[in-house]
Length: 345
Image (cartoon, one colour):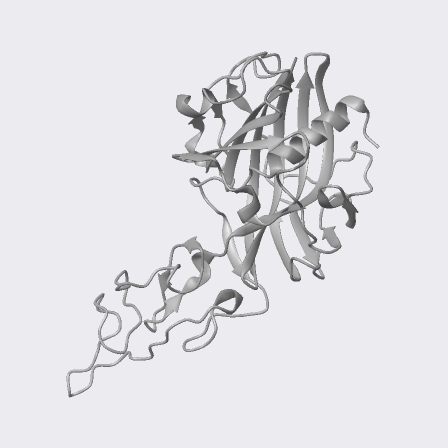
């Protein structure tokens, strides 16, 4: 098991992981469906119904022309003309519809509400008492998104509060998970029941190098009582280099702006938090943007609502490649990440 400082780093990483992929902005990564394919006139991703249109020729009677960019009778869409159709009207929670060459709706860019994450990450962390150190972990955190709705959304950032007494977020069962393809393979995530719901253990020491840049990491679950079976894969990203604040590894206050050197990964998430015993928990802000953005500034209006005079603060900057997998009427996010984390004091 990791040492005391590493265990604290892992605890904060798990807390921040709930915010990864929750942001209203940024990029959701690749969306796929398990056990279903999108076909003209068939069932869409995850079982949602799509409207078919097979018209593709011009008839002597002046029938519809698929491919002219105008949605006509018998066509669900044509080019970018979707009429009133959206991911929501197709039965999903969010996303962007596409149109097939046969003028049928393609919902592969749509997704259901995220019920959490399964992930592997390599973490460089520091505290006021610990120099920059390395740890690694594999974990899963599944929950009903309705139980952890944000208190406020501003641009690509969301503010939440995690009570110390555990009365907030409750974790649900996503089944035993097997992770393969990395430098340590297989990794078995084993679910167990705790006071906050279903938690997972990875059987790792925390000292392992779990992957190298570009390795394909595979996830597979047979399903649990709350999350159906799922599978998917992502490429491991390169380590993240933070360019602002320059003193990230020694800072004792939370900055508003974070910058990094982009490498073309799916996304970067910045999670900051402040714990206060007087407030009864941890105020959290999570912001998510594309890796290519290279910078994010946390809105001052959200920063001002973090607990005053906190016992400790933390900042977690996560670079990840992500696959969003639709399962039934839910989705889960699978990701591999490289992380920088600072806790003070």
